[in-house]
Length: 417
Ligand code: FAD
Ligand code: PYC
Picture 1 (cartoon, rainbow, N blue to C red):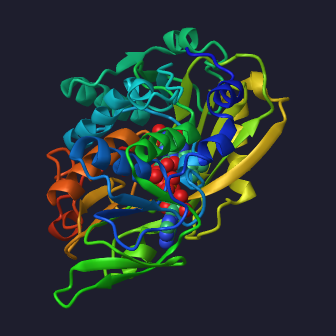
Picture 2 (tube, rainbow, N blue to C red):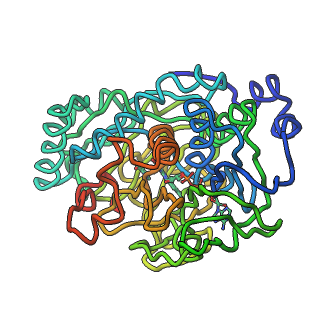
């Protein structure tokens, strides 16, 4: 497990966020770009980086309505894994997991990827069947995953309560040892710095408010709060707000936006060596390198754009956490927050061309897109550069909802949302 004091390393290397900011190439947009990415999260900044680094497109910009990494990228609980059920998903998420493994070296920026293992608990006979099915499907796809007894689970995570007399006793677990965590915001900063060095303009406080199309219907530019910018290629990576942005081009997507929240405890010495997730009792926890216990709650049951969730949702999660990890009962909560995720009916993303020429979309990651950041950004850049999907994202179209070719990770998701 990597152990760093993130802030001290960051300050030493770059003089903090302000230090990085001073390297901005451009604070105001040019009149025209070869391509524009809407959304300065990990997916958007990553796509810009790969467009420049792998496809030679350097007259490009990322426009972000707030500050880079201020969306879900900087708000998520950073669980990274590739143990998805279906072949299409396994290819996509494992492509990403492999990219995480050397991302710090590629970007020359420590994203603090820590493959400490992700363990998923089974509490019922149904859970055991479903989770074992995942283990077999994953192994068939060359993705590591293994079944553990309760005793082996406890050996891997000593603070886990495996007493059999609790409400939902642990009956076993699946362990993906290559899974783990990273530091959320460094991913945005690392991609931003690397893209910036290749000439990409990163423009904050610039909200897209319209998409202009020519007489043939193709994209010709975007309206923003900082004026009109021409471009024949626009890639949208605006998690949580994709329907709004694509609505400007007259496209309706099967997406719903929900608040998803998380919280951290006060920092403590290392007590938790891995990530533990429980779908059934709906709780998951890991420990950050700063010592805080990182705990995620469920999505709110209603659509909203507020970046916070209902208190009763986190209260429910904390009851489950205290049952699974009695040792944390007396810890105090340090802070909580929320993000807005957009979700498709089959809980798989869309990474695709749209019916509008020159307009591309990367969305629908729901509660699970952080892990996909490098892989998604990589194939999205390919799609924009070549005006056709990379083989890995070819199945993740908009048309699958019309044609019934769903990649139905909904029931298969490892978390109960
Ligand atoms: P974002 O980082 O949200 O970036 C999109 C950007 O678009 C934002 O910065 C936004 O300001 C900008 N934008 C929106 N509208 C406009 C506009 N009109 N003009 C310009 N810019 C605009 N995933 C996992 O894999 N593992 C986890 O453990 C995990 N935990 C999560 C926990 C929480 C509490 C939340 C909220 C999410 C979690 N996720 C997790 C999901 C994950 O965070 C997201 O799927 C992922 O970060 C999406 O990245 P992104 O770059 O697409 O989006
Ligand atoms: O996709 O692993 C995940 C996840 C955990 C918490 C939110 N998403």
